[in-house]
Length: 169
Image (cartoon, rainbow, N blue to C red; front, top):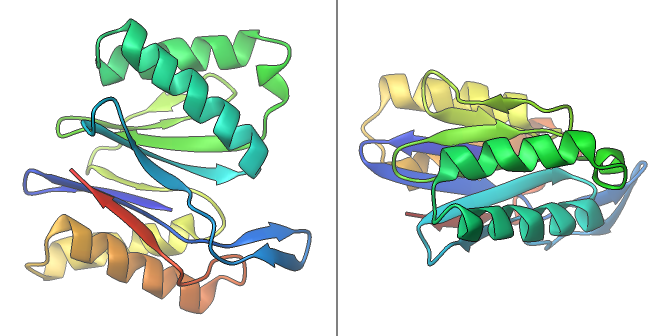
């Protein structure tokens, strides 16, 4: 999964592969979605069922804090870390709006990258490297950067495919 904030545009791209161990069980999963009246985009890496729980909790935090992404991310991380049930969830969230992007984890991490780029999941580091190169050496928009970065990751990582979902703000 890759999140790109670039030139007043936000794009989050996720592959569709769901694996259990070394077996691909689904190729067309949808790991990215728009939230809060299409003003926030979020994606996940990790266990799918866990991620759906986190999406619901994060969306509730966005509503509670009237769309304040920073506050919603911090409050979700607090709950995730302190709640006995949530603490066992194995997933990461990448969340972004036009001003901020964050990685949110169950260990209480809420990290805003310096460059507006986030890569999570098995193919995340490959997509992140590709996105950084594309931002530095091309005039592509955020959607094109996210798409191409995920295509690069899919050619390298066996747990990443090229059945992409891309959401843009």
